[in-house]
Image (cartoon, rainbow, N blue to C red; front, top):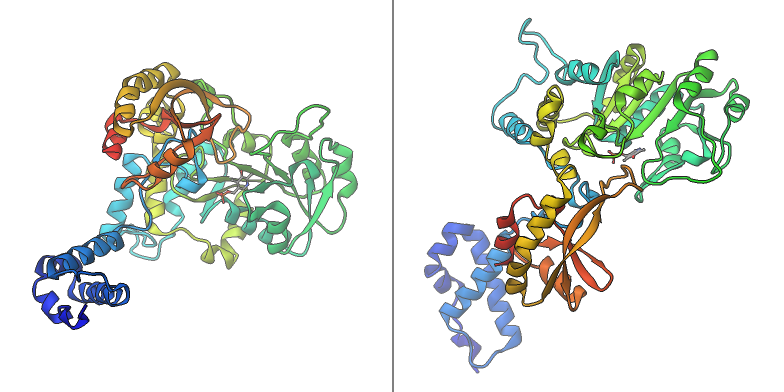
Length: 443
Ligand SMILES: *Cc1c(COP(=O)(O)O)cnc(C)c1O
C-alpha cells in the first residue's frame, strides 16, 4: 500500500464545492485533514478514493453540525421534566421572545419621558394583578429569588425554619446551603415530623432576621405530623416586627382543581395568608421561561432591588418578553388550557390519551419490529409539584429488551425518551400532542 497515492487536501477541496457551501472552507479543510490522518493511521487496503474520502468527511461534518442541545420527545410521563428543560412555552411567549431578539426593545427606556426606564416595570403590574401583592420583582430562577431575599433581609442574622422543611431540590439546591451562601445563619426548629408555634417563638431572639416557610414541594411528611401554617406563622413574625418569607417553589397562579388536578397552593393565597415575601418559579406550573418571582411588601421589594446581587441575577430581554406574554395568558383563565402547553398536557383526559395509544400501537410495532401493547400508567407533574398526586394516563409498553429499545430510541435524529418499568419500555403519551411527531421520529 502506497500512502502517497492518497489525494492531497487541495485536490480534495477542488471537488468539495457543495460541502464548502454548506460548512465553510476552513471547517471542510479541517474535516478533510482529519479524514486523511485517520486513513494514514488505519492503513485500509485498498485505500479509499476521492469520492469515498469526501463521503466520509461529509458524514463527519453533518454529525458536527447537529446542535448539541437536541430537541427530544418527552414520553417519560413527567410533564415538567427538569432534565428535559421543564415548561414548553406558549406560542404567544415564543413570538414575544423572538420579537425581542430581532429588534431593539424599550427594555430600560421610558417611552413617555424619553428617559431611563426600568427593566422590571414590564412585569410588575401583571404580577401584582395576578397575585394580589403590593409589588414584585424578578430574577434568574427561584433559587436566585431565595438567595437574594435571604441576603437582603437577613445577612449575618438568623433565619428560623422548621426541620420538616429543609428541602433539597435536586443536587445543588439545598436550603441549608443556600442560607450559607446568602450569609445567613440557619436556625432549625422543631423535628422532622412535628413543629409547633412554641418552637418558633422560643427561637426568636435579637439575632433573628426573618421567619421562613418552605413549601415541601417534592416530598410529603405523613402520619404523626404537626406543621405551623402560614397565617399563624405570619402572626408570630409580625408580633415581633419580623418578616415572614414563604418559598412556594412551584406555586401556581390559578386553582388547578378547575382542570381536574389536585390543588397546589396559589401565590395569591400565600400573599393573602400574610407572608411579607413569596417566591416561586417561572418554569414550573406557571408554564413560562426559567425565572424566579419575588412578590410582596413594597418596602421589602425596594430593598431587594437595591441589592447589588439583583444586577447579577437579572433577566435578559428575551425572558422578560416571554414572561410577560405568559403572564398575560392568565388574564383569561377560560382559554388558559388551550394556550399554555403545560396546562394543556396536564389536563389531557385519560380517554383521549388511551385512544391515541390504541391508534399508534400497531404503527410503532411495525416501525420498531417489537411487541407493543397499550397499558394504563400514571403521569407526574414533575419539578417538585404535587409529588404524591399522579395523573392517570396511557402508554405504549415496548418489549422485549427494554434497555436495548431505550438505547435505540435515544440515538434517533429526534431522540425519544421513555422510562423502563416492569421489564418494558414505557412511552407515556400524555406529552405527545401530535401523532405525526412520534411516527416521524421513528422513520
Ligand atoms: C423548585 C424549587 C426551588 C428552586 O427553583 P428553581 O426555579 O429551580 O431555581 C426552590 N424552592 C422550592 C420549594 C422549589 O420547589
